[in-house]
Every structure is written in C-alpha cells, then in structure tokens.
Length: 466
Image (cartoon, rainbow, N blue to C red; front, side, top):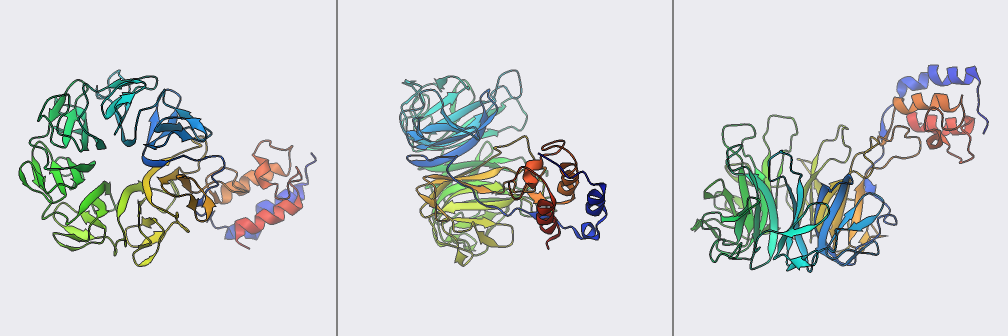
C-alpha cells in the first residue's frame, strides 16, 4: 500500500504544459450490462419514478409475473440494486402508470396509480384502475367496465377550485358504475368519477398535458390520442384537446395514435415546446408524416422523415444530465429505420436529425422511462427500455434494458467525463494512502492496489487525448 510521495512528481503533474491542453472526454452513452438488472418474464408497457417511502424507485407495469426472479404480478419496482413487489400486485396486465397528489401539495402524500386489464389489486376488487400508497392497494370506486390504456394528471382550471385530477382513457363506457358516465375517457378527483363532456366515439390510447404557447396567455390542455374520429360529438381525427370542452387539432391524423409527449426542441431557446404524436399513421391534415408528427398549436409537421414502422412510445431524456448535449426525444416501437437510416426499434431525435441507439433491440420496444440509479454521484440518469425483445445490441436483455452513461476508470467525481476535476483528484492519490482523500481506486489502471507512475501515464494520456 505504498505511495509515491515525491514532490517532484506532483510538480510535474501540476505544472505540465499538457494540462493546458486538457479537453473534456465524456463517456459515450451505450447499453449497460443486464446481469445486475435481471429480466422480466413478459412485456413492459409503462414506467414511472415513485417514492413510496424508501426513496425513488422505477416502477414498471406490464404483462409479467416475475422481475429478476422475484414474484411481482404485473407490476414491480427497481431501486437500482434489486427488484421488489408492490404488495400482491394486480390480477392482470398493467398498461399505464401515473402519480397524483389529490390534495395539491397539502399534507397528503403523492400516490401511484396503475391501470390496465385487472379486476383486483392486492387481492381486493379493483376494476381496471387502482391506487398504491406505498404500502397498500385501494380501488377507485367501482372503476370502469373495460380496460384502461392511458393515465395523465391535469388541472383543468389551472389553479382554480377543481385542483389536479387523474384522467383515464381506454375501452370503457362506464366509470364508477354509472351507465353512460364515461365514453372512453373520465376524470377521478380523489373521491368520485365524472365525464369529460360527451367523451370520444371509441378507444383512447394516449393522454398527456401540453401548453402550446409556453408561458403565454392560453392555458394548458389535456390531449388525447387513439382510435377515435370524434370528440365531444364533433370530428376529431385520432387526436383532440380537452380544456373543459373538446376541440380538434386541425384536420387531425389519418391513423391510430399510440403515444403523445411534449418536447422543446431548442431547449432554452425562443421556440416553445411542441406536441409529438406517435402511432400507426402516414399522413396528418397538413401532409405526409411517417408514424410520428409534430403539432405546434396551429399545424402539423413531419419529424425528419419519421420511421418506417409504428411508434409505440415516446419519452424525453437527457443522456448527459447537466452536460452540454441537452435533452432529446426518444422513440420506441416496431421499426427498422428512422430518418432513412438503420435504427432497430429505437431512435433518438435531437431536434435536427435521427440517430440510432447502437444496435437497438431485436423486437418491438413498447415502454420508455428514465431513472437515476445512483443519485449520490454526478452521473446522469439512465434510459430504461421495455418490450418484447431479448437482445439489446446483441447482448442478452429479456424485456428490459438500460441505455446511457456510467462512470469509467479515472472518473473520480463520477460525472461521466474526464476533466480537470479528475486530474485534481489524482494528485493526492499519488501522495497519500489508498482512497484518502480522493477515490483513488478509479486511477489504479493496472489493479495493483497502488497508484504509481504507470497509472499516471495511462490517465495523463486519457485526460489529454494523447
């Protein structure tokens, strides 16, 4: 456990002209090993981060009974180290997840809501939608008479007396046991169900909130997508807006909409966010748009040539956290190309071009979510992908995989890049005992429990790009 304590060596490192040439070498995003994550024995359809009392965990819902070999019954939570159940789980497939604090920031906690095909949760009756408070399941009244495919939270009067509520969409015509109370879409306020006008004329598959003018005068709205062609008794081709009344988005879309998400392509720039719709369609009312389209509040536009097959999930994810790249839009589905280039069922849109996620996955991807497995360090969250696949870029990954940046050797502050902060941490590692005062093991390139000249040479070359 010896250490070089030569002042001359320290002086060479600190004063070397090479340091003036140091650049930041970021660890590139890639698929992460699946051994620790384990696998699901069926398809994942939805993901959300929830703190049920043990800190943030990634909750995954779908059609599976085991996660990492643990019995979970359609819904599971991943804490970064292991899978755990949510009580007894639910009796059938989970298709959507959402979080809601029904007392709007009051003393009550934020709870997790799950929806899908199930008839019971935690062994008790719960028709297609249920609430998990971190310890127990409970029903939302009489639930619905058909499956629920989408959930979203929305404050219809933007700070008024109604407060935030849970909105559901699916294949149902009653909610709370009341006939004709809900046509494929309904609201739960924490105590009772209510309709959204006349609803739609058939299935709602996607719900999200979106403010088309950013901080402008217009209030945000709840946007619905699906198989429907009418909303509130008026034409609305596969996508519509609810803000207390239904309205169409131009002439809509010519096919089914599976997913909706808001994304700001220029980040902090002047351009407001747009609404992105993915699904099984080729045209909007404003022209061609291959399986994905953008609504700016006034018209539809294509997204860089789109994909060559249906888009089933969309998510916004920043692969370098506070780094310079900014967030991007990620698309998952059943396609082999995006923007005219190979992209196996997954692709990334940065606001100007599509790119692949290495080799992608070998079958349909149906769920996307982000989660920070190590909140104590500076590494950014990882993107989690769920679906029918068993390989990610040729590596074993049964129904779930992780994409992103993780700290590499020499990354002393675990921020997924090599820079002057890491060089500063190297100096005490060659003058003091192992691990004091910096995480010296990250500099031990030859794994001999000693940071010496051989290790210094390796990492000086790494930091300077030599």
